[in-house]
Amino acid sequence: MGLLESREEALSRLAKSSIVVFLSILLAKIAGYFYKIAIARYATPEEFGTFSLTLVLIGIGITLSSLGLSEGIVRYISFLRGKKNNASMGTIINDVERKILFMSFFICLGIFFGAEFIASFFQKNQLLTYMLQITAISIPFTVLSGFYLALLRGHEDIKKYTFVSNATQGILKVLLLCTALLFFKASFALPLSHVLTAFILTFLGWKFTYNIRRKYSTLTFSKSAKQEKLRKEVFYYSLPLLYTGIIFSMLFWTDSLVVGHFLSPEQVGMYSVAITLIALLGILPELFMQLFLPLLSNYFAKGKMSDIQYLVRRVNKWVLIGNVPLAIALYTFPGVFINLLFGPAYSGAEESIKILAFGGLLGSLTNGLSTLLTAQGKTKLLAYNVTAMVILNLVLNILLVEKWGILGVAQGTAITWLVFLGILFIQVRKTIATSPIAKTVLIKVIFSALSYILFLKWIGTYISINLGTLILLLVFGGVLYVGLLMFLKTFDTQDYAVLLSIKKRFFEKVKAVRN
Image (tube, rainbow, N blue to C red):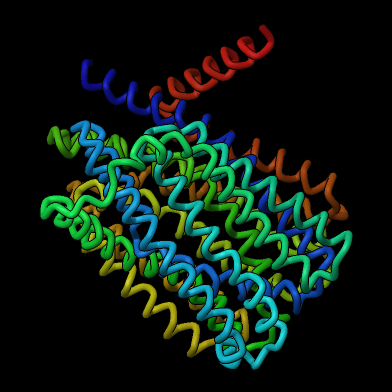
């Protein structure tokens, strides 16, 4: 019974932390979707596609500029704070800040003056040259704000970290874009608003970390061999993180780069709309991952394999059940979602969304499995996995794009996520000595999902689909889906216990706010 209580407590903590993270991420995601919708509504597909490609290229520059140090510093700050070694912390903070500033300015200038050369790889897009030159100015600001956020994380100031990284960033992007669109053309307003957002986030990060940096400012740049060894240690620790960051990012950027190279900017815009909608499937797993990693790490340290099995199966079950109806809705009514959110100019993305809905659902299940490998310390294996998937995705996209266009890229990506899930499934099964998803749960979810699809297809032939009827369809279909899962006894006592815990905590928060 004690073990069961421990499991329930862990699940409750996971769910409760997800509420806090959910509110923060939800606000950021809503703002992010308003941002993409505003771009699609006020810019042409060519401008939308070119700006999407610009952000991918700038993202590569930002990742290279950080040298992985912004992530590495979190670990060392936390470690040195525990030892109360202020002198070493001052050395690291100042050294990292100087390194990333130098690299960010160097890459910023490289992209600014090399923009025309870079654009020559993407249909010689002159608009891309123009947007790259403006947006490149944001690189030093973005890298520096990332450094400040790392300081907040290292000092466990999660409230300020969340405020800046999620809520403020999302709202700023929308407000500045809308303001810029009132005075300038979209081709200039898009990169300008991006630069201004990066600048303001840097200022906020600088302000929030002022006392931290001031505390250690007089304890920097020791010439001792010990401090020099520490600087090298932090640098070499961070380099693998740089590789991992780049390779993970390429798993999501490859599509846009291939479409931009082989097809027109308008097609990049179409594919960007598809990716934006499919990204909805990534929200649910993201909620659980904040606490999932430390819980698994703790269980591995204590050798509690039965608890690891239990937690992995439970989280994968929740992600699968939660994302299936959303994936089905995107597959069944892609045109409705496009017209309501982005406008009919992007209707060419419909078929791609259908394929990516399947790939996105599979991809959402890889998060938890990848996290388990990380918790076990198999980061090298995970890096090998992702490297292989990037190569596979690139090869498939190149082979399929010329014949099928963005539909071929979507097919290549869906196949890549299927293979990736299969590989992770085998590796995790070997690690925990059981299937990451119970077969009975999988069968029940598939049966309920098929019933959900048939319901949507049947009722959709009798009514005209608009925003109101779509909401009603999804609500009634969702009730049918959940009802079937309950009838088939897919949920157990632990599921209901966690739901009651969430409900209790929610009403406690509401009562506290009222008082």
